[in-house]
Length: 115
Length: 115
DNA sequence: CAGAATCCACCGCGATACTG
DNA sequence: CAGTATCGCGGTGGATTCTG
Image (tube, rainbow over all chains, first blue to last red; front, side, top):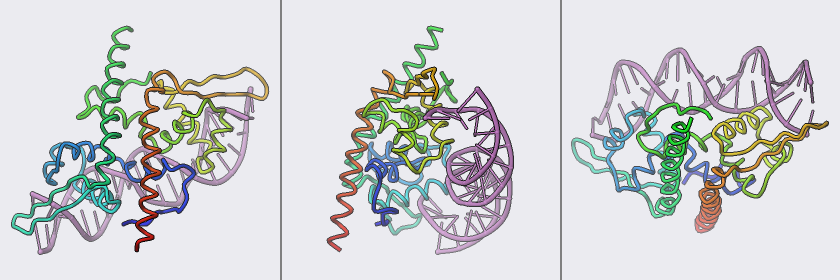
């Protein structure tokens, strides 16, 4: 496991941000809450992410033990990512963030109609 | 209100990320969940943030109507920030992120003791 | 006290090419 | 299919200075 960059945070929430604060991490986790995904599946679900960033963010999530990476030794290669036990504990937060986003967008749509 | 950068997100959660995804935003909101704060108070609570970033992040949160900025016309100036009605709806998410961070840190502490 | 305005170093991230 | 390696741009964000 990646060692903590600091032993002390001003607030524990900083630890959370360090884990899921990456540019694409929440999005990746969001997709993984619907079940395990192959690398190529994630790539299709996130057309705007580059291969490099996808791999990088996945590696970091793996180091933080949020996701599990399973490699099948076969040709062509097959790699599957899924939420770990710890990762599952983030589900509720992720879900709420998704819901909040929906409501926020609705609110914006309505208020722009008002104008 | 800041107009949406895109009319369409692959997932609504992207809207959430756009609003609270800034480097310091969640931390700021975290502090504001405990009540309104003056600029200088926020600065003290977050020693590592620069004046520039604090102002910038606050402005963006204000544009997204997450927080309310109140200016008292007096000398010396006094500016107070507080959660808006919309911002209050984020409280539950913020709270959970705080809690999750605590548990995550505990887990790490324990596992390093095991080793 | 609050914040606007500059300057600029750094690195996050993308584009591309290559490996097994 | 999954991932690494390299190069390089651009924008984030830090340090500093100035204003009301």
